[in-house]
Amino acid sequence: MATKQNLIDEAYWKIKDARDGQAVHRDLVARYMGSGWNQILHDAFSKRTTFMDFYAKEYKAVIPALSTENQYELTLPVAIAQLPIKGEGVRRVQGTGTDFATGTLTGVKFVPLSEFDMRYKDDLDVGLANTSIIGYTVRYDSLWFDKNMTAALAAAGVNLLLVVPFDVYTSTELLPAPSGKEVDLINITVQLALAGEKQE
Amino acid sequence: MAELSGLKTIEEVAKHYMFMHKMPEEELIRCLQLTIDGLKKIKLFHLRGFETVVKLTVSAIKTIDLPDDYLNFIAVAIPVDGEYWFLTSKGRMVFSQDALPLDTDDGEGVDIPDGYYSDYQSSGGINREGYYKIDEKNRRIVLNSLQSTSTEVFLLYYSTGINAAGTATYVPDRAREAVLAYIDFGYAMGEKDYRAASFLEDQYNKRVDELRYLEMPRLSELRDALYEVMNPLPQR
Image (cartoon, rainbow over the protein chains, first blue to last red):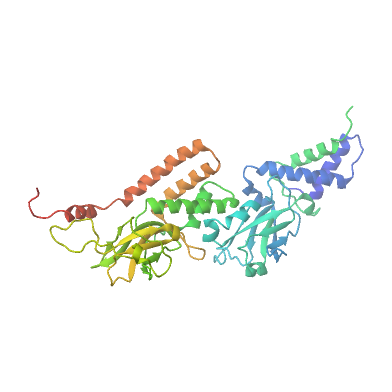
């Protein structure tokens, strides 16, 4: 596993070689690599997105607030990776009071829902028989909870597990590229950098 | 050594299905709804012992209100010597009122005049404990010819069997396989994959057949039912 800066540098030199010594700015290389990063995450895990949990970062005790429409919502602390499946960048939402060992609050469960499901489920048996499952939906940079969200849970905050985009990692941070995909990441970056070049 | 519980909550059954099928978490709500649908159907048609009994007070206009969780009728009964005595349905009973006074001139609330005497020449087909007529449109059951002392009756019915939020709803473990098979079938129908749905419906029916085997009347019940209509006199 290499740091983010190592990977940018490697791509930088490869691009420079391919352009007969003409360099591309490192910031541009980082942008190309960011596009490649999202693509690789999706390609690697499109069949089993649960494996993407390993690549997620945890953000603790984020406090939801009541919107003007009287619905609990929170603004994500960082941007999430924009994957083809909407909202997949939010891997898990969990109440802060959850104690894994004793089972306290484990009865409350947050599950992702589409906007459609969130509007309709309350009128179904499932919405009437169980209010301990709290649905949430992802809208670009925010999470919106269904009406099972309580003031007490919101006050305690929620822990988030997020798959973050490339630019959220610091340059000295190890980039957890999926096994064998580092080379692909470099190659995609080089291809994107050279895509606009005029061919002889 | 302690054994695992024979009761699972509907949430546990839904999670069981999702775990076995490696499903993503966002399917939990849909899976839970299918679990509820399957359990309702199996309780209604195939499981014994889930009848609900309530004791209801007869109103001034001789009606009882259907409970909110009423799904299907079994019987209206009064107690006789420790057993339920079932009232008989009478479709021709006159009734159109919501409140007193009843229009007795047009027969409303008038006791059906049969069973005046009990003798060799009296006809059968009468129920001296009373009659009922289901008025489901108005969510009530109309009663008639009740014994004067009967201010309360028992209503036996199938309820939805699903508790409202806050109280767990349990699935007997013997019915779990059938519920899981129903979820499979429900998903195929939801996907409009009717070929798969047809196969999975067969699988569901097989699980139901297994369940029915467990729910069959016991030998003692059959023997008693047989002996009940026999007597030691010579049979002609």
